[in-house]
Every structure is written in structure tokens, then in C-alpha cells.
Image 1: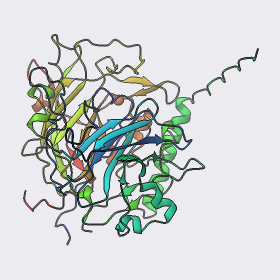
Image 2 (image 1 turned 45 degrees about the horizontal axis):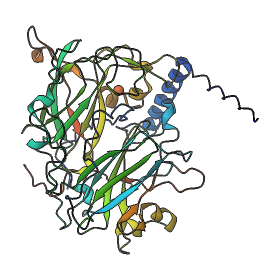
Image 3 (image 1 turned 135 degrees about the horizontal axis):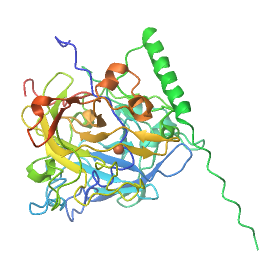
Image 4 (image 1 turned 180 degrees about the horizontal axis):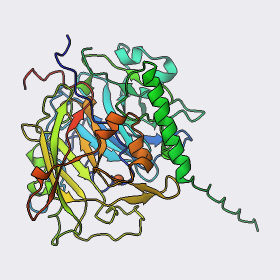
Length: 196
Length: 265
Ligand SMILES: [Fe+2]
């Protein structure tokens, strides 16, 4: 199938810069799981650069299906107070499927969510100062053995997408923007436009 | 008693001429690849040496292409009326007083590559104040903070994909990429499409800024036509008499749209 007209030229990406911290992160951005959900898991880790140093000014976004497999999402991730406009956080009832957190001063992040329905992975989008165009990756909570992306990768590359179960319900997922001489660089993904 | 080692002096920052020469070199190298038949590139190369912080923050391996039509990334987050308030799109009315600076209105449409409007989606902006200072603790630029300006705003696009903000024109500001490094005035934009694959964070610039050729962040877009798409247009019809100047900036999101969107939606 070809489009009758030439596709519009896209607007180029630019770095998120160092000063997004007062604008993009929001209260409860990492609290994706409905309040008190017994299936809540924690996904956490560090973001590292090519010298193996933690990156304190990265912003991570997470997108995933609901526990029942719905990919429709729900509004309300940044729910606002109607009186003063401050972000009061999610209702704790709806699962919006969306999370956003900045890394701490030590390059660490954490989100609390519920396992996605229908797929073994949570989609992750990485922004940072010094990164001119965001990067997509995936945090696989399990290796189902038949996933088309994992199956296409050699073992050392595949390993960068698999979370480590540290203890019950706590998954570690480190992100390495560049091979640091010891550790493999995380697999980052491209999604070309046009018919698959 | 052990002696304290002397702190190593920081490497002297490069001169603007060094950065400028690298900018020209990167642009010429790109032009040569296009001349030789390589496809044009709309986005910056993540490995762009003139912007020094890219050095350790870009992957060296090629991205892995996902062509799975069932990929979760072909859907995306949604936002609604609970996520924004009416005041969020007017950055000049967030405090008791008026911010200092030149009041402006910025508007445009958010489209996908097929020209379809992106409807009801979240647009977030953030910027420095009129003096070039961010309301961010780590911004050490010795320019005044404005107690009446925070510099962050949000809105949802309407049925035509239109967004609109009222704000003040941000000032240029210094940064430490090299000696005498200054960012041209810009507003940061964050956009969502119908699919997570269309996610975009970028910066909007103002027409005719003399700092353009010196700035490695803008110049990281080595394609001339693509780089020009980051510059807004002054639109006199958008200006409001005795109130504000108007700038127009349309945005086209890259990447596949949501697979579940029916034609004509
Ligand atoms: Fe900026």
C-alpha cells in the first residue's frame, strides 16, 4: 500500500536538556499500580553512561497494557487540583498504563506497577541531557521463549532486555546508553513508519 | 598525615571557533552522504561531537528494528480533562503579578506524517524567563528569577490538532558546552501521538536569532530543511493588538501512528 501523497517531513528531535525537572516529572509519576493492588511489582535500576557513571539527569517514561491486556490506557496520570492547578496524582483506581520518573542524583529510578497483560514486557522511553533523540527499549519481566524481538538477539544482547528478579516482586532493569568497556550496551529499538 | 591530592584543573573549555569548525564539518559530511545517495536525515545523529555531552550518552550499536505489528509501542498513553486545567496554557497567569518580558502567543497544529491531526493529546512546554533563567535550582546563570513566572505549561490539542499557549518570549542563556556558549531563545516542547512510537521532545526557536550558527544543539540537525522546521514563524495575523505578538509553529510527529486507529478518525 502506498500513500497517494508524499508523507509530511517530521519535526526533528532535540535534547530534553538539563532543566526539564520543574516541568515534566509529576507527583506520583512512578505510582502506576492501582493503590493497594496485591499484584504490585517494583521496576527499578540505574541509568549509566559510556564511562559506567550513573546519569542523574535522565527522564524515563513507561507504557504498558493493563493487567487484562487492554492497550487503551486511561486519562488521569497527571490529575490536577482544580483550585490551584497543582498535580494531585492519580485516583489510585484507574490503570493509566503510563509512568514517568526522573533519575535521582545517583542515577536511580523506580516505578511501581502491575504486570502487563498479554505481553511480557514494559515499554521504556529514555530522555537525557546529552541525548539528542530519545531511545526506546523494553524491560522484559520474563523470557517467554517465543518473543520475536528476544528471539532475534544473540544471548549477550538479549540479556540487556531481561530484568533480574531481586526478590519477590522486585525487578531490576539497568539501562546503559553506551558500552562502558565491561558492560554490554542496552538494546535500543527503532519503529519504522509505513506498512510493516 | 596523608597529603590531599591537588584537584586536577578542569580541561580548558574549547573556543567557539573550535565548535563552529566542527559544526561546519559535520554539516558538510552529512551533505556529502546525501550527495552520494544516502537518505536524508530528519533527526539529529545521537553521536554529535560539537555537543560535548553526547560523547558518553549515545549508543554505539545500531538500533534494532521492531516490525512486529502487535508491538505495544503501536498504542500509547492518553490524557484528558483531569490532566490539565484551563490556566495551564497561559504561563503569564500562574502568579499574582504579571511576568516581565515580551508577551507572546504560540500556536500551531500537531499532525502525523499522513497529515492527520493528533487530537486530544497532551502538549507540554517549558522555558527560561525573559532574562534567560530557568526556575530550576541547578540553573546557576546569574540572571534574575521572576517571581511571577515559572515557565511550564500544558494543554490538550483540539479536534484540528491545534495547541495554543500564552507566555513570554524566553531569553537566550549561557551554558558550559564550550567557552562563550549561548543557547538561542527557545521553548522546549513535549508531544504525544496516537502511538508511543510517535513520542517527541524537541525545541522551538524564534525567527532570525543571530545565535543559530553558534549553537551545537540546533545545528545537530545537519539537514538544512529539517533544521529550519524547528524555527517558528512570526504571524502578524496571530498578534493581538495592544496585547501580544503571535508565533506559529506546526509539528509533525514521526513514527507509525496507532494501528487501531481507523481511517478518517
Ligand atoms: Fe533550554
